[in-house]
Length: 110
Image (cartoon, rainbow, N blue to C red; front, side, top):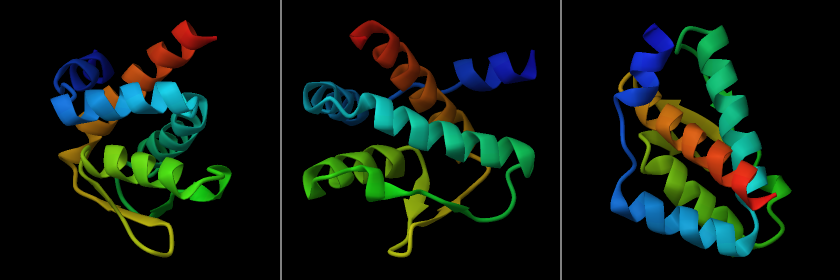
């Protein structure tokens, strides 16, 4: 029940929705989903504590990386130059909403 409340408590911003649309056009949704899934898994395993890395090397173009960074940062996760991520507890509902959106888009685009 708690997980359901967390997933339902945040909505994506209009800017995030536009980036999702662009990601769909660039066909990078599955890569973004994998990245966000790994981050959420890390947060859940460590109860929101500790550092986490976002491996942006799976994106072949700079534009794809920038889209992904912008989308993730709008969810309250600040990416550092070395790939590590800094977040607050308040970021979890927003990143969870992003994950759900990416998951659904990925299903629909297959």
